[in-house]
Length: 202
Image (tube, rainbow, N blue to C red; front, side):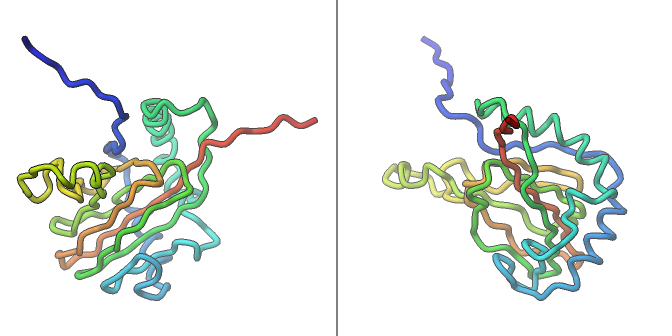
């Protein structure tokens, strides 16, 4: 008798690819981010971020207007795949990260945001990938695992990416980013998004 997989939980992480011109956004991200101090928040190894320290968040940039037009249906697609309520998806905040060689991001999450997204504005080869903590770790920890790095039972699951790749995940999902081993900088823009109920005026 043949058996098929039955999914009882939604897929948590989605990856898409944006083919538009990111060069103007890269230039602005470098200009805006490099003035900030190193190793603030979850940044380490000399990494810099504008998180919670910018009056001009990237989701308001004209340089990314076409990207956000492209992103909107993909956000809705993932939101629907998660079986979320039919609500408007509203940007909460956004920021840019830059890591030169040796820069990395320690484990953290984006709670209480409902959805988080990162786009690799500039992703050199060997510049490190995002890794998501397996949310079923505690349930699988007593099982006879093979202990193969990066397999589906590993405690951290890497997601490989290149320039233009977009990763969408729930804000509560804990993650970290590997050190940049390249001589070129890695430039990432992230955004937190919430499903918001709009009250009717009385």
